[in-house]
Length: 349
Image (cartoon, rainbow, N blue to C red; front, side, top):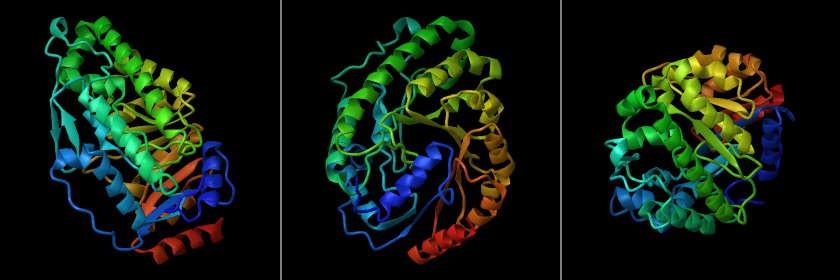
């Protein structure tokens, strides 16, 4: 596989394979992007709905952005398809400049809509259309990523409302577990359908987290609702889903988001199929080097680390962290600065 917008793919591929094998060739994976040229003109979308769901606009906007960006080290040009957030079993959707969200639809379990995968659902058809068009436009140039379809635990919190779902976990746990099972079965079906579209056009897979995986079934796992759960409730309602998915997938990275999620880290580290942890500190919290002790804790448990760092934090971090299974995401002000960083790091290795 070659990509016109990725100049060193063969070299990057080998380092990425080493990352997934908790090995190292000469240095850890460092994904550094930089502006490369002025993007060619693209007519703006008519509205935010078009921005996220129109197949042609989504595909062309990514093509323009990737063409104008330099992807150095192990950075890969790949999509993060927000159209996945539109799938809500008929929920009312809201489109904004930065995101898509949906209103709850389960007012009571006695009158709950059927949580079945409706092939005629507008959002599901739109997701497939966007993925298919991106696969056509990206062929030989960039990678089409797995769309951002919610995993069952977070999706049920949206469909029911988080506060109501938390009460249900106490008052009616059996109903919650049945719903989670139905959503997970649907998730598998959607994943397989979209994989069949993407696999013929590209090697491996990538999600909203731009870490290329050499296998088709690779997902960034997460549970935002876990921030509101005790360890006991996490074990009862969330851990089974994560255990099952991690065992089924070819590769999995866990997106740990916010201080409230840290209470579950030891349980996550015990899930064999989770390869690495990607930490997001949350709004208003320190980032970067402040979390070196956390990254060291993750590495000590035998897991990989995906860390987002500022340009000038990369080299200090490398002095504190083991290179095996380490993936650093950063950006540079220019291509020259990006190449200089990679050169300095390579000399130190």
